[in-house]
Length: 486
Length: 110
Image (tube, rainbow over all chains, first blue to last red):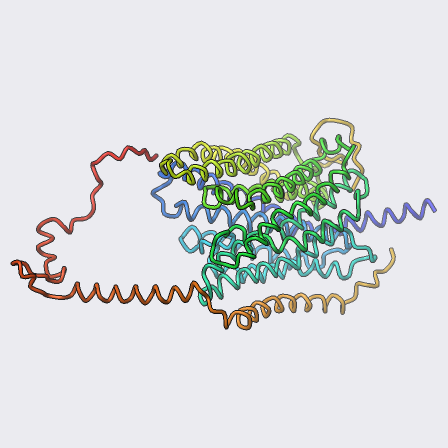
């Protein structure tokens, strides 16, 4: 019996190694190019933010005018970094959980190159003045159909891997991955088709409402499920414990599926579109706390009592920070959806931006960093070169996103909005109140950008297989390794 | 390791085409929503917009007609088209390009 179990374990290990080897290039390509786009995006973010308090900065170059740089910053963040980090995580997690080697790694890699080329051309198009100016759809209009076709070519193999999975069991992570894989085409296609194709013939005000929905739907129905899937995989793996509560996971999943699609139109509160859409959006934004609580509690309870693993494992530390980011996103999103808060933040500088940075960086990106620190040593068969670089990446990211998202943007938006609403205060004074916060955002982005440039280089060295040859993982503190092998 | 009975070429093949069908369903649903649901809606903003556009066009036409009219004002002056007196305007320096104001505005731009 004992020898039978051992032989099963060996077979299992061989299968895992085969899966990792089959996906090495597409996964590393998505992660590395995603990290490179993140570094580009953050540098553009620094320039855009600097222009908000020093309009003359690089002011003679039309390519770098505020409107263009800001659009390029957000577009590369969402589709350059966010989507590619999600793709790398989806294809690896789905292959591992379905116990299926990738038979189409070459196809995925080729389409990944096309995706990057399109993002590059789209970004150039924005900088040359061809951006649409529509939030989260900033690229010139020819870009979205190409991205959708590329998405199909990347995502379909994970759906096939799920359909032909070994064994009948479906893991919690797989629910979320399948949901994200199906929701993305719905949201991306509907949003773009209604705004970029039908908008000319329809109602422009409604197009703004659909755009507001599109931003939230991309966040809650694509980036959120991918990040949650990663957290549900990493927390039990690193701690060596089962997920705390299956029922809580079920409640979290279905509440996200029911509430997620309604969020968004509260952003256009007061616009001449049906009021029920605006208030349903506000209600759903507040109710988003339910799935967020279910997921975050489940993950935190799974890791409870394993504080040394949280402290030492880079993957778990980033994942737990991401879960705190999820809770913060839900709470801040609920507060910003209240009509009394919207009065101040709707037209003020930084309210929506701060919230989106909190969600995209504080929650999604932190969880994705956790996934990357877990996946990369497995697919490259090397360990991370430097614990110090990982520590620096963690702390600069954490302080940076709290400082930028919560303090500068959201508090700054309330201060700015309050000054704008107070009619006996001159408009100039409202700008003066904002000045310190905008300088703060620039400073924060400088540090986060620095951390991510080094993260990108670290990742590139790992892809070149220059990582440590060791059987012990790179941990954040020096101690005897106690973590179970994945 | 046990063979995986779920992994058949037919299952892989039909999943691929179900995927394509799903994309098409979303596109067709969007076209249906656009053409079936929204055709008979009377939109207050568009109706108001028509009225505003009509008024705007009327005023623009009246202003253009007034601009192109020659008339004796009866006080020793005549009304002519602006381009007829551009030469005079140039002599008077009215057509010079804009220059930065020398007046202090009290604001600082970096």
